[in-house]
Amino acid sequence: MSLPRLTLAAYRDGILAVDRVTLARAITLIESDLPADQPLAQQLLADLLPHTGRSLRLGITGVPGAGKSTLIEALSAQIEGSIAVLSVDPSSPASGGSILGDKTRMESLALNPRAFVRPSPARGHLGGVTRRTRETILLCEAAGFQTIIVETVGVGQSETAVHGMTDCFLLLILPGAGDEVQGMKRGILELTDIIAINKADGDNLQKAADARHAYSSALHLFAATAPPVLTCSALTKAGLPSLWKAIQTTANPARRSAQALAWMNETINESLISSFENQTSVQSLRRTLEAAVRQGDITPLQAARQLLQAKP
Ligand SMILES: Nc1nc2c(ncn2[C@@H]2O[C@H](COP(=O)(O)OP(=O)(O)OP(=O)(O)O)[C@@H](O)[C@H]2O)c(=O)[nH]1
Ligand SMILES: [Mg+2]
Image (cartoon, rainbow, N blue to C red):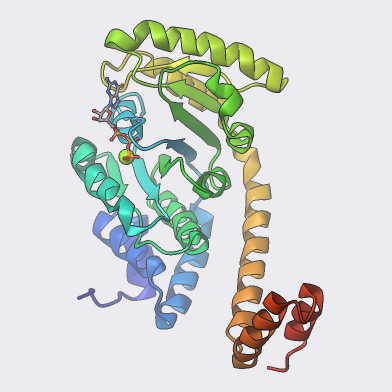
């Protein structure tokens, strides 16, 4: 059963007083799908807005097992001040294991008084998860967190979403042949500010150095401003001071105004679509028109126009 809601003032004052219990409860409030919670959540965010924006927002992506959680934990020793770690995982229950995994793997970070670890909200479609994570970033900033790290598994569109809410986007990869660059999704390279080859330790040391060389040369063919490629080990902590320095140099908070506009436009698009789809007249007509389009009785354009003109 969920805890009762607090008053607006209690949420606001608790967060500004860096009370973690209140912060956690405020995140639960903004994660809520209950229509009754929305006005309070939105008013709280509006009240806290003047206290937001003063953090380094770092996004980290990489395939499952790349070492994201271990790296975040190890990197925290390099980071001065307070750290909040959030995760974006808009996927199916199949990846439920990674959340449990994070809990154990980031155990020491969770016990660190400088850190606040919040696992991914209940899954849903990407738009909802993205909104909640953006708002959670704002709540954590108002609570004074100086570095905010958003971890996402490198599958699907969540990378684009996390890139759209961070000042620096780090791609974590494993030591392997550099010709993988060719096969790497073009889209992800365009988003990447830094590439770190993790697990550069033990038998992998030479492989990681080779991969770094191969990636650096290949990436220069791709773009004039290729992202820096570093090697590191979350296990031995080798390369972590350089990685953290590179993150600080690369982080670009000037992106935020464009990100805020994009967020506004996405919100408009999403609400237009959902209010359109929720109309009962649209719902019934849609099924008929879909069948007609499938049969070839009507063109897709005609069907779309009819549906858009359906009276509410
Ligand atoms: N040798 C070595 N192993 C590492 C390193 N970093 C992480 N690992 C191991 O790799 C495995 C996966 O690490 P995680 O940190 O859980 O990886 P992740 O990217 O967070 O994985 P998901 O959350 O499932 O997407 C664990 O067994 C880690 O101990 C490293 O630098 N070197
Ligand atoms: Mg993880």
